[in-house]
Image 1 (cartoon, rainbow, N blue to C red):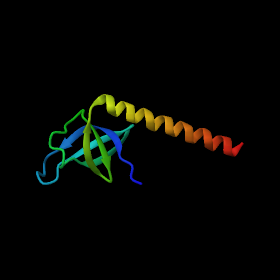
Image 2 (image 1 turned 45 degrees about the horizontal axis):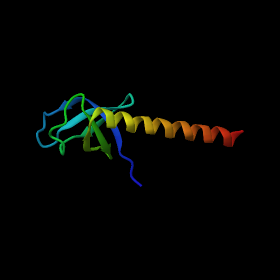
Image 3 (image 1 turned 180 degrees about the vertical axis):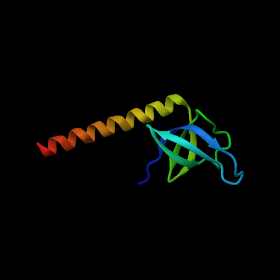
Image 4 (image 1 turned 120 degrees about the vertical axis):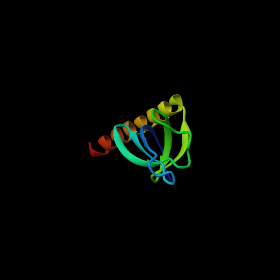
Length: 86
């Protein structure tokens, strides 16, 4: 199973026209992501990334809903883990 994660572009490096890269924040964790396939993506845009590649651009509402779903999943897993310990 593959997991694609939403993130917010904080900067774009276009110094190499053959490999457009961006710094993307995933909940405060900054990663270098290739945005070559999304020439329309820019600073402040949300993207879905997998394995270091931007796959799709998202609007802010879709990104927010996805991030909330990840937070709920994390909370549920933490609660399950805590109940297994007790």
